[in-house]
Image 1 (cartoon, helix red, strand yellow):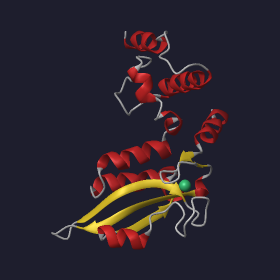
Image 2: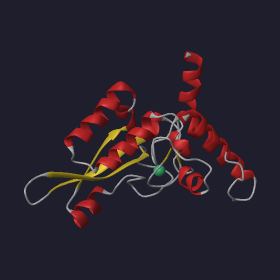
Image 3: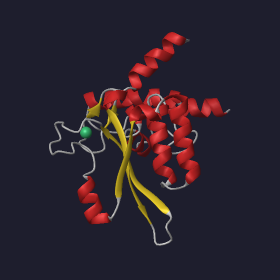
Image 4: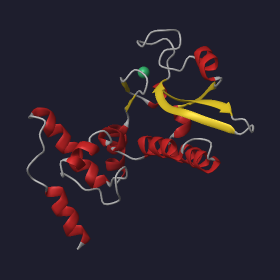
Length: 186
Ligand SMILES: [Zn+2]
């Protein structure tokens, strides 16, 4: 069991940077940031939650690298840039931190849920951008609904995506996955 787990973890390491679009190849290279301000009633509002490269002096150029420019954000939106290392969001403590974000309701809930899935669910990051097309092609019909995928579904869509890159981008004719889902439901 432990061998399978470690290979899964290796596969999941790597996230697309929301700023430069390149891959963040290690947990140590990741940074999670957001913008904070107060509304008229003094209530804290947090927006713009995103996973980016940690390094400030990077290929993205500019003194802030992939991060928000604190000066620009304050000038334009009167908001403060806040952030934490990606390592703070991994493991049981990271999951608890994300759950506390959900509870606090300062971020849009869907942003926190998406980050939780990206950091904690193996294969989610690799497949999340493939699913809308796979669903529209009727290649798969997620059992739990759009955005919430089982490991078996992600494995199928990952294989499908890899095949799609080799052949023309067209809907595959087989729908093995739907047949399997139906079998499982019976
Ligand atoms: Zn980046």
